[in-house]
Image 1 (cartoon, rainbow, N blue to C red):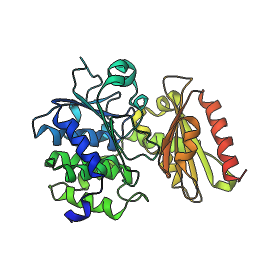
Image 2 (image 1 turned 90 degrees about the vertical axis):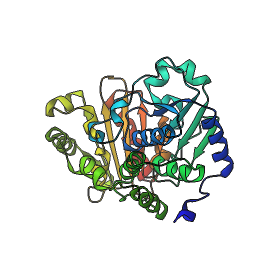
Image 3 (image 1 turned 135 degrees about the vertical axis):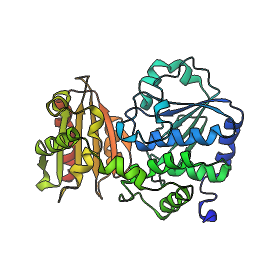
Image 4 (image 1 turned 180 degrees about the vertical axis):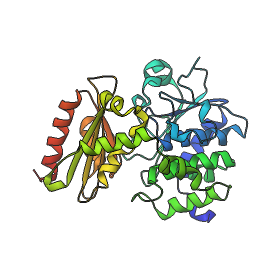
Length: 335
């Protein structure tokens, strides 16, 4: 087992990353805005690993973690500011561009533009925002990559870290259902389970327990869905008014593009949302082969994975939907 997880990362990169970590005492761990289970689980898991050798760590995210992650140890300590910016090292997780960290970047831009940064991520679109960048698009989740790093670097692993990292893997693979699940992913999950954690702890709150308002939101989004390309393309949307009509909150729209993608015959599913700022629309895209979600979202300055990606579009939602849907139809019609 151990040998299968050894030397998965370039040893020179591991050495460089550990040099940064050893020379730092106060470390900020950044999770990207609009957090998911992987970025929050990765940041918390890394913090637990680094605290054991005596590092002082602060986990920071522009937005509070969603309620379905409240079971994660340490999640209540996630902060929305870097405070006095007194950090020797910043570890940027699950994103490769500093603007992806949202208001944390805009409020602390001067500090972050000059900070020592270790960037660890698994997105194929990551160009690297650190002095050291560990990027592996073969990893199902940043959490998987962190376990590989932990194995090579000899960092400690306790039960709290294992649970956070397992949550990252389970949420980014949809309980090992997505095609990004590899034999290595399962080996990493098995290693984490040997530290006393079980998938049920993650699966129950994330996938099985739903507030009624969230179920109603899902039903409304499906009811509003439109299709094209003989049903191979589907899209829907949500706005502040959509949320108000069912009593939902913004964090309840998780994986709605995935729900649309699961409809029979669908190859490409797009979910558009517009909350708060009427001039800004967020796109979540899910694709089946041969379509590539990351390549498509890069047209709009976004990115992600071949099967799942996203982008922020500086247009009102109706204009953004018209633009993207027309582009998608041209791609799917082979134009």
